[in-house]
Length: 114
Length: 113
Image (cartoon, rainbow over all chains, first blue to last red; front, side):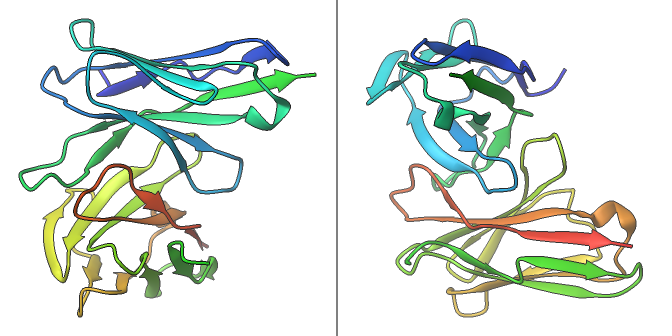
């Protein structure tokens, strides 16, 4: 079992719809979780991070965390064609001192069609 | 542009040659990371520096790999005796000590022939 699992997709949604991206993780002790967006041939860009159970909203993006179910998701409202990219979920396995040692999933490819 | 920079952006080399990559983090960031990403996979952690100290190395970082951050500013990653399996995108990231998310550089794409 991989430490971080994501459906590879592609997830296809129409423009203006809500895209829902899901991620599960195996280490119950994980404390912080990150979502990155990666366009083809480019490096990952941080979208948002979440530490606490529940929802965290930032503009059109909402991250949801359920530690009991070891599940984290990303919702993208009013999806745009420019949102078409691979979305990477990452779990922090960093050591003492609070640094980030990110364990990434393989990513979910999102395609938003006009 | 005050983001993370990496050089070169692309490198083609023959098997058995040595290569060195450079990363310049965001200037106020004291934490620096190297990751490797192959096609269709997420980035894999290689190593972490806090200032000039290398505090963690992944088992992925074989004896042929060495990383340095001599003055706590830029970092280099050297691969000796390259193998075709080393072909990947090598990503550098940095964050501040208040570290939330890491900022990734554009990466160095390595192709070993």
